Amino acid sequence: MSKNWKIVLVVIVLLIGLRVALPFAVKYYVNKTLSDLEGFTGSVDDVDLHLYRGAYIIHKLNIKQTGDSIPIPFIDIREIDLSVHWKALFNSSIVGEVILNEPIVNFAIAESPEGEGDKKVSQDGSEEDWTKVLDELIPLKINRFEIQGGTVAFKDFTRQPVVDIKLDSLHIRATNLSSVTDSKQELPATLTAKAISLGGGKLNINSRLNIVKVVPDFDIDLKFERVDLTALNNFIKAYTNTDVERGTFSLYAELVAKDGNMKGYVKPIIENLKIIDWDKEEGGFFQKIWESVVGFTAEVLENQPKDRFATRVPIKGNLNQADIKIWPTVWNVFKNAFIQAFKKNVDHSIDFFQDDK
Image 1 (tube, rainbow, N blue to C red):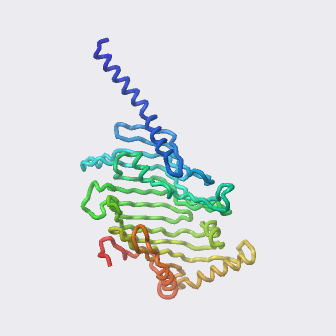
Image 2: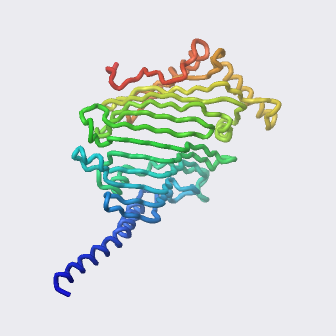
Image 3: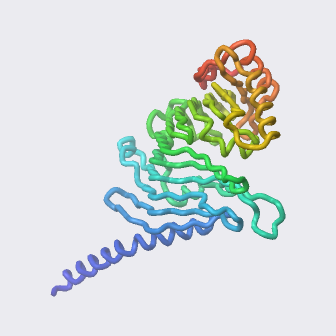
């Protein structure tokens, strides 16, 4: 065998060895990154490389909160696809794309471990800057982000029965986050989200964004409609000591932020609410009395022709200190009850492009 062929053979063997070793090296790097999280520990089962499309796929990522009694992981993702966003290359930009398949995020409350008194511990992820973690896992600016088949859950293990509410079938799609196209527009990116809640409620979010700015600008419309409140009775009873015989809940919101100033509103609506049925209700006499008082109060504050209880919570301030005004909220409860029923929709009264007043 000639010397040149030997060199070619050595190069081929080295390339094959590199290709075989790369997934293990990437897996080690990912696990090392996750092990350095503040207040959390994480790991992945496997990593696959797809060099032909500049991508790697993480299988079964699991992140748990450390040092407390939360019995469920904070994040559990079946698969993460991190790659070059090839469509953006047509705009002379090298940026990234992230797709999360079947992610589960668990917010939770539990009793403190033994020996720590009566304190409760919470799992909400606030200790860590998750954007920094994502930056370490993908070295490119993210231009497209998608979640497929996601779940967001809240569990309170300090209550009996355990409070367990969640959003299922979550699909989020965010595009042009790095302003690759339409970079001169004030809000060049878009984000849409859909999900189904416990009780059959349907969540829809449509928004326009500019996250390239240090303080992002956004214009968000949110609809969360027709939640059957009886499906939430464990949650309602845990925190109000009542339960619901019938009723539906909807929520509408508009939020706008421009140059750090935010304004908007949140409008919750409850319809056809019935708190107690004495013939069917379980529990003692005083429990029934309490539920009757709650039910009577809700009945008084309903808009009687519409059988609708609602308020409109104005929000105004900056992104670091939003101000939810209490007295306008109280006034809107009575305004809805005795003057007019709120419309079941977003008001379209908040617009990013309107002049600030």
